[in-house]
Amino acid sequence: MVQIFKFLLNSMKKPSRRAHIRGNVFLDSLRLTVKGGHGGNGLPKYGGVGGQGGCVYCVAKEDVTLKNLATRYRDKRANASNGEDSGKHRLLGRRGVDEELLVPVGVQIYDDRGQLLGDLNDSDATCIIAGGGMGGCSGTNFLGKPGENRTVHFDLKLIADVGLVGFPNAGKSTFLKAISNAKPKIGAYPFTTIRPQIGTVHYSDLRTVTIADLPGLIEGAHANFGLGHKFLKHVERTRLLLFIVDILGFRLSPKHERRNFLQNIYALNKELELYDKTLLDKPSILLINKMDLPEAKDIFNSNKPFIKDLELKLNECPENIKPEKVLKFEALIPISAKDSTRINDVKQKIRLVLDELAAKEQVTDAMVLKENLSNKIGERGPRII
Ligand SMILES: Nc1nc2c(ncn2[C@@H]2O[C@H](COP(=O)(O)OP(=O)(O)OP(=O)(O)O)[C@@H](O)[C@H]2O)c(=O)[nH]1
Image (cartoon, rainbow, N blue to C red; front, top):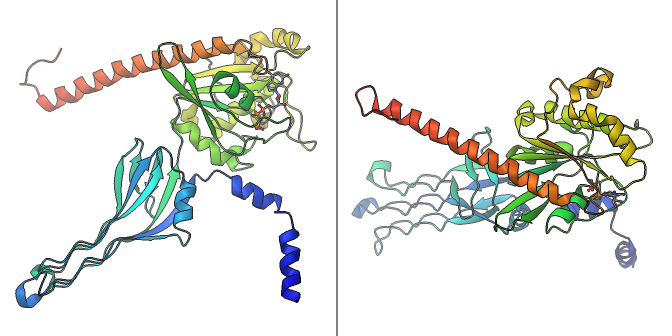
């Protein structure tokens, strides 16, 4: 009776907010123990060779997530099967069956010592993460060898051309919706987005550019406050950064100070610098959002020189958000994501910067190739011009 009552009580309870968030959270890292199959034993009497153990390998696919992988291996173990022993009727034992793990494109796989085992950036890219043991033969006294057994760490870093970086409520989701085909959630309160969203922007020449909205960045994210650290890593693989700030500034909570939009730019600059200085070398564009608001134009006009050259007001910036090196933007565009004002300009500018970057990379690649060739051929080889 008590059990039935407990069951009824539990089934009436609403799922907790934490459980709801956990269910929705985007999984971008996972640990699994993987084990290759044991090699089968040989047959000394007839010189029979045991089958090799199966291996565990990963294949990258566009439409899978790490969550699929976690659901498939709830016990966090993936094992390949053992090789067959050699027998009187089958001298060469059958090979063990391999275990195939489908992983999302963009995943990096590390072993427990932090060594990179694979970086699967293209669809159908494959890598073995636990080899099968050798089958028993005369060299091993006809005893099969054990397969590799290790704990591996999957780390997913999204691959998008452009990373959208801004504090909560700046209008990232609204902007992504205005410029691309993405359908992100938009809310009048911070942290509506708890998973990175990727939108694709289409151009008239059929070229497409992907933009990733990286949510939850707050002051202190580099030190793992909020969700920031979790998502900052996705910035690493983007080629262009799109900073977005609210012209009216931002206040995280009543406990926090209100930062004006200029201070927000410094704070974003500082967060990236503290996480990884090299991110500041990426080309970047600054978007000042919510320009449709009545007071926006005055604020923007009076601050224009200071945004163009961030060094000018650096001495007035609070110490805790003062960056060592200030960002140099390729362009500064005031927009209204809500009304789609100047979204087309942003679209064209993104394309221009990415095309210039690609042209530069092509020249550099050609130079590196030439240098490598010259080094290989040596002094007496043909002259490379
Ligand atoms: N007036 C005005 N409001 C805007 C504009 N862009 C966004 N908003 C509003 O600002 C609020 C936050 O917008 P979001 O797009 O959810 O902001 P976000 O940066 O994605 O927020 P997080 O999910 O917390 O990271 C919503 O109420 C939007 O309607 C704009 O251009 N003008």
